[in-house]
Amino acid sequence: MDLHSLDSITAISSFLKSYGLLAPAVASALFIIQAVFPVFPYVILAAAGGLLFGFKLGFFLAWSGALAGACLAYWICRLAGSEWVIKTIQSRFSYDIREIDTRLAFWSILIARVLPVVPTPIINAAAALAGVPFWTFFFSSAIGKLPTALLYTGLGLCLFQVKDIRLTLLLLGLILLLLVAGRYLGKKHLLSP
Image (cartoon, rainbow, N blue to C red):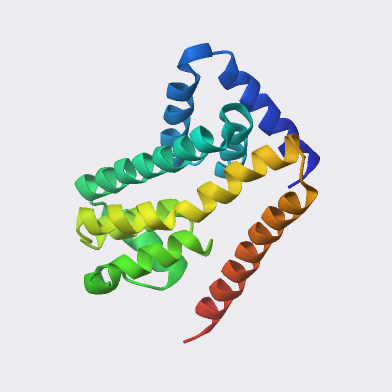
């Protein structure tokens, strides 16, 4: 995370604060939009939520908003069912999502959510287009989104209200470990036959 990201966190926090009592609703809407159309980083929005709303409410908004957005994206893809999306995923990842074993879907989605290997929109689209049952998608996503929501919301608090440097370093270390593990597993998976 660079200095520009820290400026973004404070800017988003100030933007949300300007809505007063409606700030939590606006934050929820932004989390949903971010999950469907990821035009700004989730980590910055979650950190801003932690900074503005505190850990409990910030975490709840980050987690529930991201989950609601993932579910919305799932249903959009499920109803649209585009052959173009299937071909795009197949060309980018060399995998036909129509061949996904839906019996393994719960654990596959959960692991993909926890380890940042596959972008969230791809997970949502792949689950929808592969015919993964909604409740399997919902519960695996709900559990899988917990670690990142916890880490990123806590990061917002730690970076701007540093009372315990050890906690800040622990959170940054966990995020780094998650990213390194995701990259390693992603490269290992992409390079294996």
